[in-house]
Image 1 (cartoon, each protein chain N blue to C red):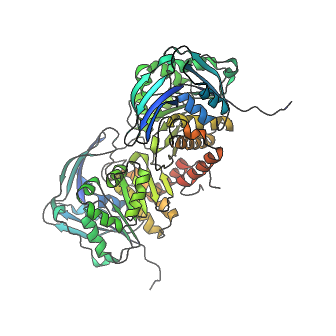
Image 2: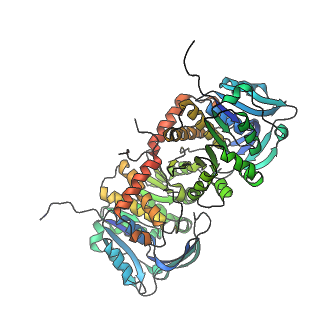
Image 3: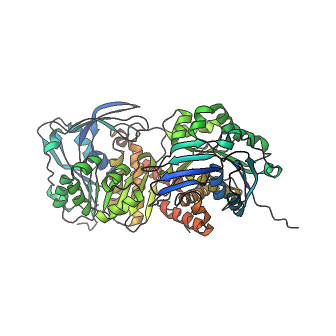
Length: 311
Length: 311
């Protein structure tokens, strides 16, 4: 018998989707997508992943096989009668925000997450962007998580604010974009608003700013501003935020330690994953991505953000 | 006779103005402002400055005395019959851009820069935001500059593009915001657009992004992404870009060396100056700012941007 510590798994709940996306670079129809898929695949470069979600009977076995091939446990994926969630959107100009053309919830409408027994002891939990009521359902089923992070979106801030505030009380980290920060707090200045969000629960507020990078506000008032990787072409921004959060959580689970030093490194690994993801449609870039490439981009981030050594 | 090398001066040409500004924090009427003023005062924390510009007979002697008290040579400031240039603007919401309410050019309308003999040998030249025809006039009067940088704005890109392209051929560095980058090149992706601007002349394209920091694109394809300082309150963003460029140029003149390492440090010093400037109206924060405070913020930038030492 080996006394070796088993690797930390990341539990991820969120949407599994077909995405139909139009960008200046082209079009894809009913491609693999969804917040849980992007974040799980990103996390899988660092740690084993357990995914929770729902698909319809139309979901191709090859997609589940792909997730399994990445070390993602798919026993928490329910197959429900009906069709898989379908999102249709387009990006124009600077591509900093999507225009949603259609949202067909389908099987997602009646989704009730139910965690396999094995999943319940997961120590690293990422609640990707779904109804905060479902995020709470998942939190009620895990036994003693070491690190819980959540994402959200403008729609839940408008329609399910009470449930979202309950989620925020129970997470260590929230991933949120700057428009959502303002919507949630009513405060225009993001730095000031972050303090207000700390008071709601999360120790770390990680503000995603797309091409402008990400700023991590810690409850002790320290702050880490990360660049985004300067890409001369963005093919499809879909899933960038999910890839960022997934890469972050995967690295945190791998490192196992919740220090601020590790959180900073995890932000950069998340940024590296996001930067690769947007270089192709759907999960296509991740399908041919190597850990060597990820480490290479991490090193590039050091050069991009360096101006003088710490004393 | 001393053999000590005299300090490098920065020559700065641009507007000297009265600014009437309204922000969520308050209002000022006919306060000291203008691109040349903000950038000269910022630069003066590091190096002697020579300012070139024009004021009307209504310009108070106390403002010129203030500039002189900062080590700024004002012998290149012409006093013309008439009134000083007056800009009136307001900022709302995230304050990332001003709404111009009035622009009274006044004496600026017939301004023709004429450099005092002493100014002509200046090695560090900053062409702040004015008509590119005037920027060329100044360049024609300097004898052998070591480093030339320019700023510009959307209005000149629309109305004086040929003259602006001539300026770009003759500068080492251009300060420009992301909207202007897109306007100048017709390219949406800023990273890609920066390469196009390198081909127009400048070795360094420094893209100013306000609260999102600044990205410096070098012609050798290296890149430096600097954060902006996370302020919980911005009182008045007027002059932030000018303070940034002025702080940058002042530091470059002080260091004397045009290495990329110095350029990166200069960007951070510029960011520090800009962050102080926006904490009060007009030049008020600069009037009580110390070099110790600037160095303190520079050190804070190291902590804000650090995630792992270079190998």
